[in-house]
Structure formats: structure tokens, C-alpha cells
Image (cartoon, rainbow, N blue to C red; front, top):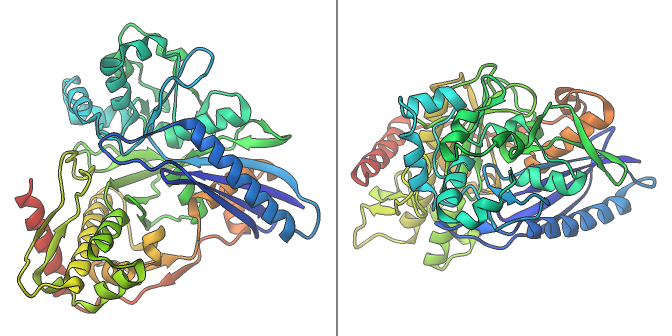
Length: 477
């Protein structure tokens, strides 16, 4: 039986999924954790990712072998990885230092400095690379490394993204894809080329053409591992779009440790306000995206403070009325990316002597949802959206489902996909193995199934919740 492997190398863990090439049937899954990180310094050793991959792959392949009808043949593999991070390599392609991750906020001063280096500031950056750099973007991490660790900088020969580095481990090649490249802050989605002038702001004396990886085409085989073709891979959000069978007009809102809202687009975008990142997707199109730094980790933190397990916290939040009896939470626990407030902290208002666990739990869920709805509003301003699909761990929470659908003015559904990023990587692997397009694989595998949620029946109350959240956000600015 021919099978493909999709890898999801995230911030918290590596997950591996094995699917039958012809039908898309899931044959096995495996997972292994990464070392925990906490902003402002969020770093991991890349070799820990590889060790996690090896453990997760072994478990997934073993489970697949037990589930298969005949001996397994590896037909293809691809890697989806956490976006933006910086893996610094020397001339021998050895790792120079721990990788800075997307949620590392030590580079916030560099983001502000970089914006000021172009004459038109944020507008010029948006026009050049589709996005305005914030601390998450790789270009800010390069600037930080240049000023903070000159000894390492002197030995720097190559810079890769997390998914690039894992692809390098599989193939020995230094290669990326247009989806992940579009999140670096030095590659242009509109022209499909690196911006050497932008990289020159960081270091004008370096020949950057030898430092950055080649950008592969969406259906390109970039190497082989265990005799099987390796697809170019992509960033986690781009892979998730493939795994969800995303179609035009649908926005995805991901409720993970962090939160995202994104949709497909036929044209590139350039938001001078910096709220919408003008990313590419993994197929040759575009994927405008808005990211929030704080999502389910906020409710996990609140559950721990209240001494509640996840199910108990869910029940408590659902026991309180819409609006949490006037309690509001601004969930900027570890700073925030959208809006760009890297040094912000959480704020709570409306507390009274009668406030209980239920109101606090509800306010936490509503605060996260309001932040994501602000992200959705920014997305709708650049691309048409007529429905929303929830994904991620938080989408399995009854409280998040109920609150988000109550506050959102668009129809809301929940994706049936369990591991969208790993599934999307499987789609990439299957496309190169079968010689088909990503869309053809998605249709063959019947990806994109959803469960529709009930619509809100109190628009005025929902508006009041969002208005109170907006007022708290303004007060904290």
C-alpha cells in the first residue's frame, strides 16, 4: 500500500500523520513534544525538532503498518512548520545558536527600527514585502542577531525557517516555498523575488544571495528521503489551508496557543496599517492573514488560576450569561501582535464583590474571541468573506464554539479535520507522488467537511460585548 507522510512541526510539538495515497484514509498518527518556551525570549534547539520528528514518525509509521491492508510503501513526505522563526547556520550548515521562534518578542525594538528605515515607513514596507514587520517576522530576528551577537553574525552563512531546516535534514537541500518565504519580511509576494534592498538594511556588506534558500515551486520535488519524493513543504497556516480544502469566501479562524484568521485570495495584499499580513498560500495564490499572540493559552492560564480542569472551565464559562455580567478581559498576557503591543499585559474590568468563577471564565473566553473577531474584521477589509470555519484545539471547546458563534455576524462552522496542518502536508506529499494538483488531491480525499453552528439570536447583546472589549483595549493603549 502506497502511503504519504505529513509533518506538523509546531511550537509545542511535532505531529506526524500517515495517509493512504489513493483514498486519503488516515492510517496512523504520532506526536512528540518540544521544549516549552515563554516570551519574551522564545527559543528552541532545532535538533530537538528533529528528535521529536523521529519519535513521532516511528509511532505513526508503526500504527500505519498495523492498520494497512498490505505492506506499506512510502510514496512521499512533506513538512509544515511554524512560521517566521530564524535558524542560523554556519558554512558547514551546522546550527549556530537556538532558533528564535515567531513568538519571541525580544526583537520588538528591531521591528520598530526597521520600519523607520524606509522613507514611507509602514506603507513602503507593505508595498515591498506585503507586510509591515513586527517582532514575529524573520527580518527582525536577523536585525537582532546582527546587533546582539556579533560573533555569531560573523559566522552566519545561511538562514532558514523551521520548515526549511527540517526539509534540509530530509534532503540536504537549502530550499523553502513561497508560502513560508512570504512571512520572512524580505521576500515579495507580488514579484516572487527576494528584496535585497531590505536585507541590505540589516547588513549592507553581506552577499545575501548565498544566505537565503532557493524558493521552490508549489509542486516541485525538492529531494528524496528513504527513496521517496520530498515536497517543498510550507508554513503551518498555508498547510492548514490545504488540509481544510479551503475555498474562496471562507475565512479560517484558528484557536490554538495563538490565534489566526486567514482566507484565500487571487491577488496579493498590502495593508499599510500592518494588521493584515500579505502572505502567499502553498498553491500559487495568496493567503492574507491576521495573527493574535494570545488565544487558548489565555484560557488555560485562567483555568489554572481558578483551579479548574479544562472541562470544568468550559462548563463554568457556559454557565455565565453573554457579557459575563459586565466583566471584560483584555487577553494580552504575553504582549500582542495584532494590535502590535509587544510589551502589553492582560487587563480585566467590571469586577464586583459578587463576581464568581463563572463570570471570570466567560470573560476570558469572550476576550479571546473578541480579539479574533477584530482580526476577522481586518481580514474582511481586504478580501471577501461570507462564512467562518473554526479550527484548532479551542474549536473542540463547547465554550469557544458557543461564544464565537454568538459574537460573530457571519455563519460559523467547525472543521471536522483533526490535524489540519499535518493533513495539508500530506496533501503536498500526495500531489508530488501522484502528479496531481493540491485541489485534485483535496477533492479525491473529500477534505473540507464542517459542522454548522447555531447562529446568534441576540445581535445587540453581542455588539455590546464587543464595544465593551474595544473600550478596554483603548483604555489600555
